[in-house]
Amino acid sequence: MSSNLAYRPATELRSRIGEGDLSPVTLVESCLERIDDLDGEINAFVTVREDGAIEDARRAERAIEEGRNLGPLHGLPVAVKDLTDVGGVRTTYGSVPYADHVPEENAVVVDRLQDAGAIVLGKTNTPEFGRKTVTTNRVAGTTANPWDPSRTVGGSSGGSAAALAAGMTPLATGSDAAGSIRVPAAACGVYGLVPDFGRVPIGSRPDAFVNVHPYTYVGPMARTVADAALLLDVLAGPHPTEPFSLPARERPYAESLRGDLDGLEVAYSPDLGIFTVDSTVRSVVGDAVSAFEDAGATLSPADAVFEDWYRLHDALEVLLQDRYLGLYDGCKRDDGIDLLDRPGEVTDEVISRIESATHLEPIDVRRAERVRTGAVDAVEEVLADADLLVTPTLALPPFPKETHPSAIEGEPIDPLHGWALTWPFNLTGHPAASVPLGTTDDGLPVGVQLVGPRLGDDLVLGASAALERASGWDDSFPPETV
Image (cartoon, rainbow, N blue to C red; front, side, top):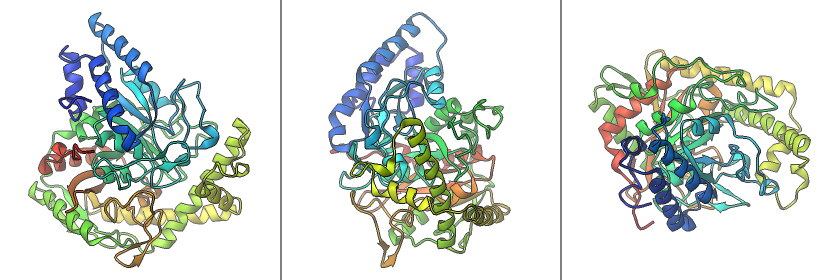
C-alpha cells in the first residue's frame, strides 16, 4: 500500500472517497500491493480476493460516478477472519479437512459489510477452529508480528491484527471466545473491541445457542477507536436469526467518542488477583493508566477481583469442551468429516479438547455455570463503585513465535490462557476492549484492557477514544523495515 495511504484512518479514507478525492480502485490496489510486498513475511492472509476485490472496487467507483447513495463503508477494504464465512470465497477455519472449503452463503456480518459498501480483501489467518491464543495452523502456517517478525501475534484473530498493524487493510473483523480479539490487538498494537453480547449477530446454525458457552463475539478491529466505531455501527443491530439480539441503538457509536474522562471512576487491577504479570508489563501499563488521571478520571485500586485462577479456568475449559463437542458433532453430521479420524491433519489441541468433552457429564456444565455466576458477581461488585475496570490485556509482551510461555519471572503459568487477562470476561459477558498505549524498551506493543458494565459498550468506546487522544498512540506504527 502506498506510503500516503497505508496508515490513514478508515474514517479519513471514507471521507475522501465520498468527496471524490480518492478512488476505491486506487485504495484497493494499494492494499493489494502492500499485501504482495509484506505478506510473504507476515503471513496475515490465508486467501486474497485479488481479482474479486478489484472488480468490487470498480463497481464502487461506478456507483459514485452515477450519483447513487453510498453506504457508510463505501469503497473501504476490510479483512475477514477465516472463521467467518464469505460466500464463494475459500474459508478454511484453519483446518486441513476444510482447506478447500468454499461456503455458498455469507455470514450475517459479511452481508452487513457488503451492504454498507465494504470490499472484502480476503480471509485472515487463525489457529484451527480458533483453538489457540497464538496464530498458526497446518493450512497456512504461522503469522508474524509486524513490530518484530520473530514474535507472536497472539490469537486467534491474529491474521486480522497483523494485517492492520502492517497497513495492509484499514479495517478487519475478529471473533472472541476467550480473548481472541483483544489478545492479538494488544500483541500487534491495534484496537479490538468485544461489544455487548447480542449487539452483533453471529447467526450460528444449526446451534443458535452455542455462543453463550462461553460468551462469544464478532467485533471490530482497527488502528483507531473511531475506525472501530465506524465498523461497529455497520455490524451492530438485531437480526431474526439471533436469539440474544439486543435492540437497535438510538444513536451511532461514533457519537460516543466525543466526551472526555472528567468525573469517570476507574478501578485499576494490575493482575485481577489471579494472574502473574511480567514486571515490564506492569510498568508500562502502570504508566499508561496514569493518563486516566491526567484526563480527569479518578483512579482507584481493585487488586483482587477474582480469588482462584484454577477454579475459574476449569469452568472456562468445561464450557469450551462442551462447545467443541458440538463442533465435532456438526462437522461429522453436516460435512461428513470426523475430526477424530483424521490423523496428521487435525491438531492435537483440537483433538484433546474434543476427547476431553466426551467425558463431560451434564453436572459438570452446571457446576461451571455456578462458578461463572460467581465471576459475574465479582465484576459487578467492582463496577458498583466504578464506571470502568482497567487491567493489562496480556501478562507479558509478545513472545517468540512457535513457542508457548510456561512461566513468567519464574512462576509457572498455563501456556494457553495463563498470560491473557481476557478470558474471565467471556465468562461474565461484560463489554471489553484492548487499547494500545505503550511499548516495552524493545519496542513491542503493550495493551490496556477496559471492561465496562453490561450494556455499556458505548462507555468503553468513549473512554478508549479519550485515552487514545491522551496517549497519541494513533500515530504509532511498526518499523517500516518489516
